[in-house]
Image (cartoon, rainbow over all chains, first blue to last red; front, side, top):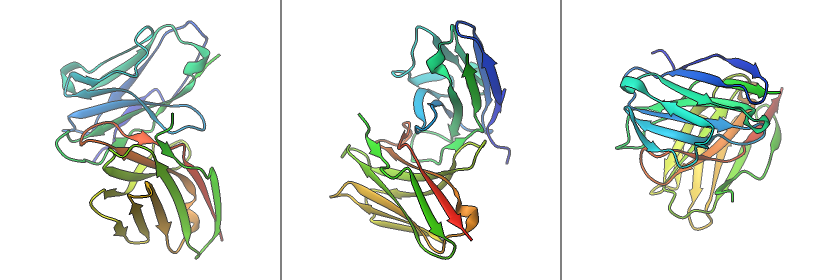
Length: 115
Length: 112
């Protein structure tokens, strides 16, 4: 079974630039999360999708972050414009659904450095 | 306000001995707890979980204990192996399908 795919794996940009991350979930996984992990911290939820609908985006800084999940499969996360404090690993996580406690599968992450 | 706390940033253990990683939580609504293991340059991988209706769950060398009254859980690894060296995250969930709340992680180093 193929895992969660993310690209790019690394990205370096200057502050005020824009950046986008892509995630391809495990086939059949209806639930998709984006987490932000700052160095020395645990992952923190940014947004949760169920199929192509948003379930929880309460912690997403909507003035600069946006995310979409077209057709309920792939997802993109965008930051525009980036700030220094956005330097982190961005993790895409997927699971089968919301009715039970399903295992959440993590992608390898995209490490973003904002200079 | 940290709802899941891993107060030990690091732990060093000799091969063959027991590793005990601890985790405390503050939200009494949490009813499902998980441990994830993370190697450098990889995403976290699921290790073991426990529901709040249980106080122990075992899977091979890994056992998780839950003390609801103390809002405390621990992960025991017996015997520890050098390949267990990684960062271990404790996570909690209050409702099926919702996002996990993670602790800051504990770095385990197992020496041979």
